[in-house]
Length: 233
Image (tube, rainbow, N blue to C red):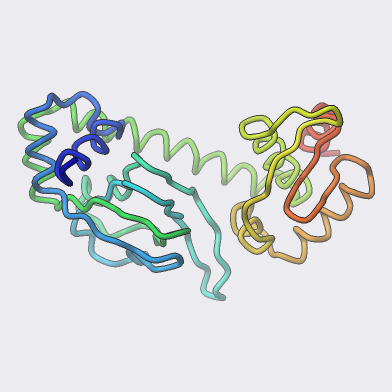
């Protein structure tokens, strides 16, 4: 299987380009430059001029903001067939956030010039950018609401509930899943610090809401965990 064919298949699975025909995909794949990134390697930094967008071919990438004190908040983690940095390509601004590889990753880079040419020939591509940007905007509004109106305990419970529902395995004792990140990385995703994550995990375990065995999390009762996530009193 040729690299160009592999790149075209990746682009086909990407919502931004899913409606393009074979000829258009092949032409875009010819313009896509594969770039390899090692685990934790920076892809671009907030404020840098945007030269193009990226599509994740393999691995995973985190999009994050960093405070002046060095505290990191992860906005999203993007996997294969996800597009990154559509907004600054579209509006001509700098990168509004930073991106780094969560694990070894291969990304396809598509320059501004090539993307603009695509939008001129295929106006629906521009509409798809608006859909992607709109989804990201809704995510950011949700993040703002969570940070403004909920506590660390509620955000952690809600995060664990999502993991249990979307990636959990049903067992005789409840729903079980693996927490594949460190407490530091988890803290960055819910907008807090590692110490508070550790403290609240211990608190939930003491209450019997979850059971921890290394990185394995068991949720005996999803409704009880949902109550922890929703109870703001």
